[in-house]
Length: 57
Figure 1 (cartoon, rainbow, N blue to C red):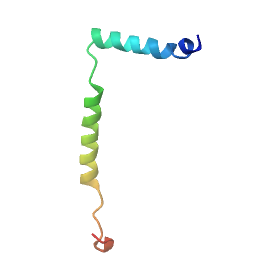
Figure 2 (cartoon, rainbow, N blue to C red):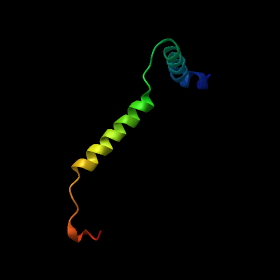
Figure 3 (tube, rainbow, N blue to C red):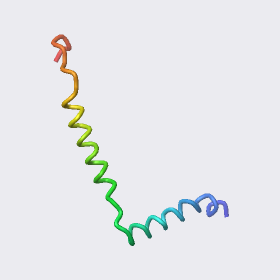
C-alpha cells in the first residue's frame, strides 16, 4: 500500500503526459533546449573578453 501511495502522483502525471502527447501538439522540448544552447554558445563566443598576452597561451 505504501508504494502505491508514494507513487500515485508519478503514475497520474505520467498518464496525463501520455494523454497530452497523443491528443495535442506538444512542442519538442529537446529541440528547444538544443537551440537555446547553440544561441548561448554563440553569444558567449562573441562577447568574451580577449585573452591577455601574458596568460600563457
